[in-house]
Image (cartoon, rainbow, N blue to C red):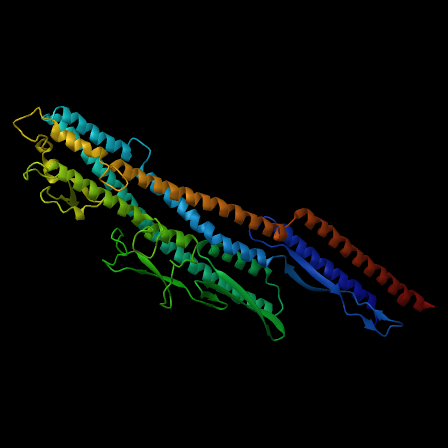
Length: 500
């Protein structure tokens, strides 16, 4: 029991020193994203008996450094993150589609549509005017190119989404591999009694990001190994393990074969997502969400009234609606144009590559927004346009007036006249965009609330840490004073009293 008091004082020195280290680390990482404050756990050392009466204390023991984290809040946040990620994507992509349609603007549908029929009205006043025929053909060409440009923009957007899906899958795999590596580091550290708080913080940061991309289920089960309490960490996606503690099951992409299209409007070679084991990854499941789901919905969505696995109103849906419009509009206008005599050729047809099809016997089913065109004959000679029922009666304007009347033909579409149909598309797109913004706003509020709750638990409070710093400093000084006092007592006892 010699120098027993010195051992007690020394335990206080070591405990205070460890506390200073923990506090210093907290203060240093106060601005580090995802860092959870750490606290020193300590308890009185096991007392001993045999020294006169009762038990005698033996000092203090540090039992560990624990991070302050509420796993319940984490789980709630990881449940809400996917919806935020999904609607972030949909807000952005719907906004891009609204820009593609260009409404309202002078170069949008309303502008080119009105300009075309305005030129037709001018021609109806003088049906034989070659100049007015040229102007009308130019306006008709602008009208067809409006749809060509929208289709090209939406097709490019679909291709871009396809590449974004590939990049998103790569990011999921990178995060999964990192989580698996952190599981290994945490396992190795805790197996030998070391703290792994920093590794756990980094792993939670990975889950934060992963949960924005795809909805995840995280579980951690404890078990005993060599007298230590260990944990098995599993991350599941779509019910299957993405990370099963020390093993990882990644996702893969598979390009569709040429000609393998889920929708007629799809681009070639779109990617499907599968597990690396070959099993199906059901991204269209009703339980799926996240940025990846948002990208898939926008790329593949065919609408609720269409046949397909994805019922969101995405790019294929709007391309299909535009195809229906140009087919119906072209057919109606062509039928009216050729109503008097079989020798009259069509106004509208389609292009095959760089070649425009003839206006004779047009197959309207081949017309799409992407290939919509005025007929080959009108492109070559705008003045060849027929504007009279009877060429011997140049003052008869009835032919052009009947053609002009198609502008307000309420029977052309179930939505009404040609303008009503397009207005219905714009309105639907606007509603989808506003709906996505509404959901996004709601999820931002929910996730921010959860993040604030987590910060209230885990964030470093520098004022509090400075208080701990002073507390541990004073404890260290007190323990050092005890050692100095005991040293002085032993010096007097051993060296001075021994001289008598």
